[in-house]
Length: 462
Ligand code: TYD
Ligand code: MG
Image (cartoon, rainbow, N blue to C red; front, side):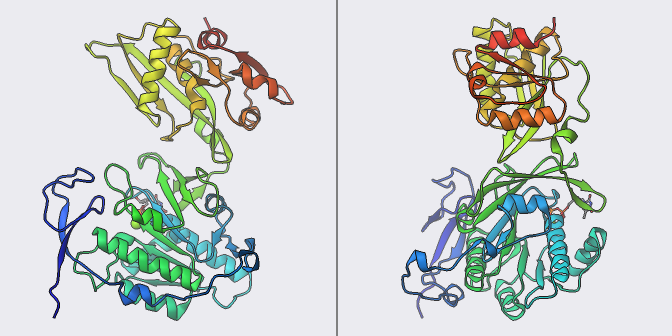
């Protein structure tokens, strides 16, 4: 009998070594290598789906947009690019308790209901694999979420081989695996959740999805740094990666597409956690601005773009005299280095004395915004707080800031301004460069600026 060889795999990044090492040379994590049995050949589990086909002309291949099915949850459909593509694998990640299981169970319920309306077709059933909770617990949750359709199958199983058998037998219209971290393949010696198990199980499920044309949703855990747990290969393997953002303390939940082979990325869906599941938020800007303080210094509204949708967010800054030798800089929902850069520009080019001040900047609602179009908003909020000069309630600001304190144009200004108009904003401070090509109808005053100082002059009330 051949000797069983063991291999040491880093549980953080998937690096493999023949010897045990205290520190992973790839990701520099300590004590992350564990011993696993090496598998040399492709196991039958993966091979059994192989379905060899000779090369074909792309023009002859059948395919249309018909292969998308709606989930009946509009926000989810939009993030997926218009519905679930058959045979696709979607990974949903997020912190514990953020609502992954809730959303997917809701999607199952909604999809079943839709199938019932459309007259039961051959495969209108759905399989929900609830590996983390017992089926009774899932039933309790489903009862909170609404009426239970008759085509929804549930199983509490972690063995990926058995799941494959169930899927083949039922051939459902959709499979949900909650979660991939607890799945295991009995052929491997390592425990569930280890890099090799996660990789192997997702490999099997992906192959199954492609071979049988059944879409599969996988729930994935995240590490404490906020990355999807398990190997990076998991993200490469699947077609779409959706990521839940938001703080557990607030009721807002944002679902963001990080990767999508069948649609645009950076599309977001906005939900709110309620007593009976996740509710869609159709007008997020309004909700985000609902509690905006009146005439408060350091608060400014900026229209940003998330995917194809404009979103008005409130940026708040607090500048206060520091008692520390190194004043504090803190931000939430924004890029820290960008804040440091903008503070330097304000200090050097606009003559604001910020060196001895603690500065805190926050985006309201636990939202993350990374685009440069909000630079001017951040600068205005900081200056407004420093000078104790509130920004007019009906103003928005829009522009990217360069190192020379010049205000640069942003992408898609029309979409942003229209959203602001819809919510009753009356004045927009924008880069002069953008002004030339803008065609805006209706009652919003556009003020073009070239430098940060000009913008501060225009927007801050004395
Ligand atoms: P869950 O969906 O189990 O999160 P995950 O699978 O991402 O770990 O949990 C969602 C949280 O939402 C949980 O703390 C309870 C809460 N919740 C509600 O507020 N209302 C509801 O109707 C449900 C089902 C859950
Ligand atoms: Mg869960």
